[in-house]
Image (cartoon, rainbow, N blue to C red; front, side, top):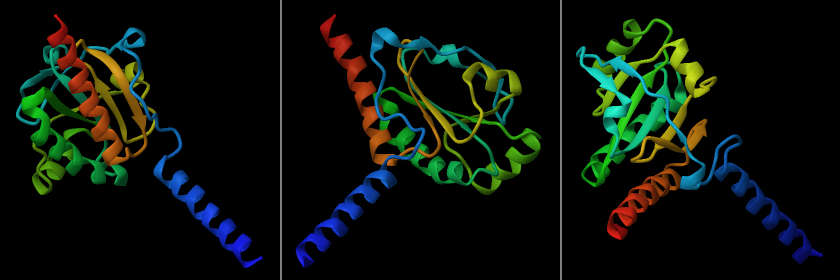
Length: 180
C-alpha cells in the first residue's frame, strides 16, 4: 500500500515537471524546410537612427524577438538572447529585438539606458504586429538563412531547448553548404 502511494506521488511529480517544462502555446520543433514561409520584410530604425532591414540579414539565422518594456517574461529572455548573440554570432546568428511598446522610443530609450542590449533594437508598429500575428508577448521567431520562418514561440521560451533549436538551424545551413 505504501509502495503504491509513493508510486502515485512520483508519477504526479513527473507529470507536473513535464507540464512546467513545456509551457502551453509554445512550439517544440523547427518546421521542415519545405514547409517554411518567407518572413515578411520590414525596415525600421534603431535607437541611433540606423535602418534595420530584415532582408539584409539573408544568409544569417535571425532570432526575431517581439517584446515590450513592461513584459516580465521579455525581461527574463533578453539576457539569454544577448548570450546567444555573443556565443553564435560567428556561426551566423543575428538577434533583432522589436519593441511593441505603444509609446515607442519614449519608453524604450530609458529602458535601454538602464539595461543596455547588445543586439539591434527597433520599435515595431501595429502593421508589423499584424504581419507576424503578434497578439501577446514575448513572441520569438527563428528565421533561417533563406529568410524563412523556421520556428515561432509565443510566451517565454525554455532557454536550453531554444538554444538547441538555434544550434540545429546553424548546423542545418552548414550541412547544406557542405553538400554543395
